[in-house]
Length: 415
Image 1 (cartoon, rainbow, N blue to C red):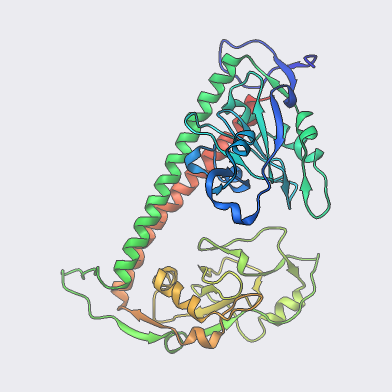
Image 2: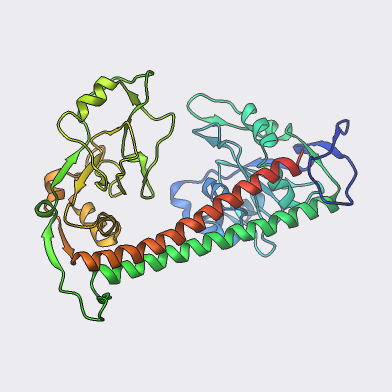
């Protein structure tokens, strides 16, 4: 089995030896997890499931979400110890099947569920290094290509045992693992920074829109009291997207988007999004036209996402899951922030019609009452909150850039 030797494209100085070829079965002994009845869940031993694998950089006893009540002998038989690797056994998508994570807790053992395969450590390896290897394209391509199924994709113990990998000396494994641990710590710190900024914004928005916290004018004087209006009384346009049926088109670039395209305050357009003919596009906009600074609000399915329309967005129409609102005498940035605050989101939830797809009627939307300050105070609030948004967005950009950097290094520092 040790007949293939290779070197990575990028490595630390002083390491010159070629990496040696192994199969995963040389390092791990595989076992499927516990299949318990629903009455057993919610108490007992910590119980690793698929979400624990997917949602963590590594798993510890404290991070595990679920628990299961089983006999001590069963818990021991299905125990997870430091350095064991957990795999997702089944998935609706080929991209996720066989996703792996490592258990890094020396203090307490855990158990694992039926949709998980445990790889019990039987060989010599650095657990963090092996976890990183299993996230490389080389490993993922092997795992997904071996998976099978029709409605769900599955991976088995024998398939995992046959996965080939190349390992350096344990010393080089430790060096690589330490480097990526520092990188993961940086990503975790950035995520925590973003979380704290989001919490700060949420708290400050509650104080601003409840008028507990007020700005003052340029002379240090109080602004006038806010006034209460129904949305329908101050919006010059309340309309939703097309209710018609439109054929998909492979010709041209006229997009028909939906609520899923309104994400994080922007209109997200991808090449794979639905396209329609120019004739259908023109018919949608026959009686109205979106204008710069119109507010977009999702009202079907995922309710309450918002964005501000800009005229530089071309050839885009929307399905009925998106509403358009125009406030000609109020700042769009203020309305955008108001629509994102918790009390307004709760008003939307109270009015949603529960069906196969939850939704809000435009008439009910128009009846929602909102409190509005004068333009000068609107501007101060909008600028202040936009400053926080910019910090949040900047931190998110740093997170993505660091994750991309990590991914690029994974491909270069592993073979």
